[in-house]
Amino acid sequence: MIALVLGMAAGSVGAAAAPRYLWRADPAAPEAATLADRIAAPAGFERVPAPPGSFAEWLRNLPLSADGTPVRLYNGRLKSSQDKHVAVIDIDTGTRNLQQCADAVMRLRAEYLLASGRARDIAFNDTQGKRLAFRGNAADRKAFQRYMIQVFSYAGTYSLEREMRRAAPADMRIGDVFIKGGFPGHAVLVIDMAANAATGERRFLLAQSYMPAQDMHVLKDPKSQDGTAWYRIPATGGELVTPEWIFEASQLRRFKE
Image (cartoon, rainbow, N blue to C red; front, top):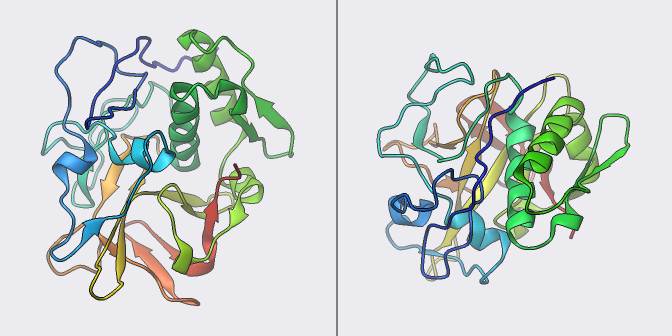
């Protein structure tokens, strides 16, 4: 039996409306800095509106580990390169090589639905196209743990790309995913956006896990001269260059509601 260590108790962190982050092991622990706390919008930009209770608001308020935290692999070892991230998300990785790129995207989406009272909406396709739906008790973290192990084991970029719908970069939203389905493939999640009211320009933040399974982390923009994490919207027909993968602009996808 594959064992994945997930937090078992509920907690809440973040901004005023404080969405819940159910994996945090100790609800009495001090509140963690959130993504919005730690990473300011670029000069001249303001974060785009995120309706209360939305996936966008939930992602924007993800708890972060302490500033300067390194990325570690599932086995506790340091990732060989530590120059590709600006922050580590405060969420468990597990002790097996399971929670990789698409798995991290599915984990965050499932955690959001669970915390939002939408446990019956949690479902992902496996690589054969079979729908894997969560049918456990929404309050039972062990049932959720077993379900996510099944998803991590039988779904991935190949299946996730095919179950999502296409989205245009010009219409990008928080919660969209750049994904290349394959063996291997890769996926990164849009976790925040900001806009410049004067110019209309928008920028966005990305998070990923990778191979082998590792801490989810907020990516630097490798094309930036100052190490910023805020990416520019890729042009139609263009590319999105991330530290460990290059995506085509046409590979943007969106979860079906």
